[in-house]
Image (tube, rainbow, N blue to C red):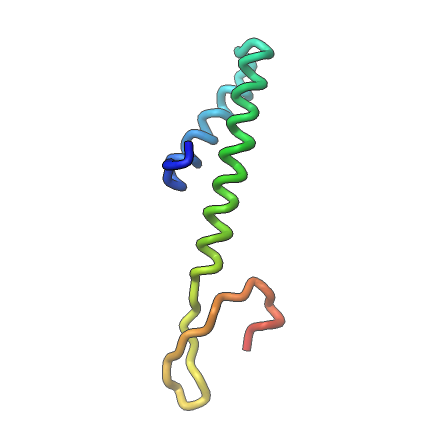
Length: 79
C-alpha cells in the first residue's frame, strides 16, 4: 500500500465506503476493510498535508512585481 498514489488511495477509499455502506460484508470482513480504510484516510491526509506545505502563492508586492511567498492556511498571515 505504500506505493499507492493519492488518486489511487482515494479511489480505493471510496470503494471501501461503498462496500461498508452496502452492509453486505460479514463482520470480520467489515472490520478488515474498515482498518484498510482508516489507513488509506490517514495516507490521503498525509498526501494533502505534504502538498499544502509545497504550495506557494504568487503575490504582487508594492511595486507591482510578482513574487512568491509560502502558503499559509492562517488568514492572519496574509498580506
